[in-house]
Length: 179
Picture (cartoon, rainbow, N blue to C red):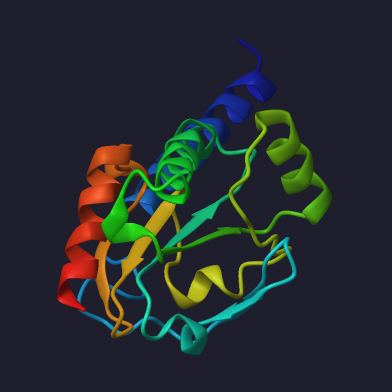
């Protein structure tokens, strides 16, 4: 093995260890269950402005994602299915839930192309940076926050415990019951 190959392999291994260690930081969360939803403001692809203030009095689910993320690609269809069920009247308690998927550091064109490819009807907000995301967390996507009508985070999930539709539905129903 050449010296250059050994150095390259050593650097790759160190990078791998650093990446894993970074993923295991003690506190990648900025907000946690029981905290007030942080101040934020986004514009959805349908033109609606959504902010922490506009969510007061409503139950909401905020999902951070990037369509290049494999875990996000596995998770987003679950959110879409729940969105369709709720919008179709299949979950009466959740009729007024606000779905707020927000991309993390991804241009509108990429998000729009993925939504079109997947035939998603779920609204989204494309954010080209991490400013909104970093009000909630420092790392790991997908991330989901269920917000009750008082503006309190009642459930939080990340890539390690991304919920299925039934678990997310139950968290939303619980948040609606707290209102």
